[in-house]
Image (cartoon, rainbow, N blue to C red; front, side, top):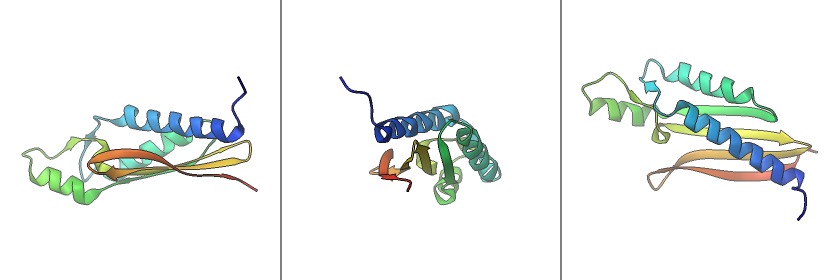
Length: 118
């Protein structure tokens, strides 16, 4: 057994942040009027976590508009299909970039890159 490397720990930290982001906000009522405030709330809450360098959340308004047009309600619930997210983690000089976007109908979270900060 070996201790995890700094890069492995940075990847783990990124996974924790994605789990928090997705499960903390899934089901939140979402409308065109609330989209910007939900983006900001998600970014700010996850950026509070240790080793989080930045979070960028974008509500896909075209998908949201289409969902609302097919509904009698003025809002829907937040799910991954409405989000594009980038999370950057910095741990002990290792920078990890992760993203979530729709892929084949599923909100896929993926590791984009791991590199030395220097």
